[in-house]
Amino acid sequence: EAGVVQSPRYKIIEKKQPVAFWCNPISGHNTLYWYLQNLGQGPELLIRYENEEAVDDSQLPKDRFSAERLKGVDSTLKIQPAELGDSAVYLCASSFGGQVDNEQFFGPGTRLTVL
Amino acid sequence: DAKTTQPPSMDCAEGRAANLPCNHSTISGNEYVYWYRQIHSQGPQYIIHGLKNNETNEMASLIITEDRKSSTLILPHATLRDTAVYYCIVRGRDDKIIFGKGTRLHILP
Image (cartoon, rainbow over all chains, first blue to last red; front, top):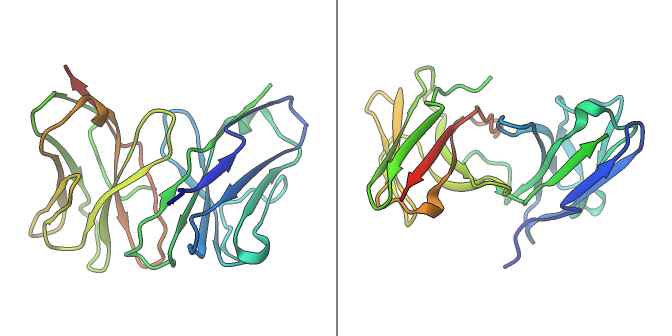
């Protein structure tokens, strides 16, 4: 069974440019998460979806970040415009339901470098 | 903020048991203890979780103290491939996983 798929794996852009990351969760997983991981730190939740609905986006910087999960499957995270401080790894995870007893499966992440 | 405290790094000889401690003194009755690990350049990988009882699976064992204020993850026969950052997480009903900085485990040949 395929795991969580993310693309691209690496992205280098100049500041003020837009960038988008794509995530395809494990088949049948209705809960999808986006995390941000800075160097030397643990991942931090940005947004959580239950099907198409964003049920927790309290940590998403809405002035420049946006996310969507049309049709409740794939998801896209966008940054516009990117800043130097956005350089990080962006992780996508999915789970079967949002219950506390369900493990989250993580993708390999997209490493973003903003120059 | 993370509700757990872990040592920043540990060493373990290859073939020996690796015992990773975690303190979670403010854990509440309905919160689970989860362990994930992250190998370099990969996403975090689920290892094990428990509520009150000790748990074992094909990867590791989880020992939770009777008062639930601390736990230990045991990798019974560590290999070089177990070199990773190990995260101990207390996870409540709202499903949020809050990662701390974890323990960087070095397996020595």
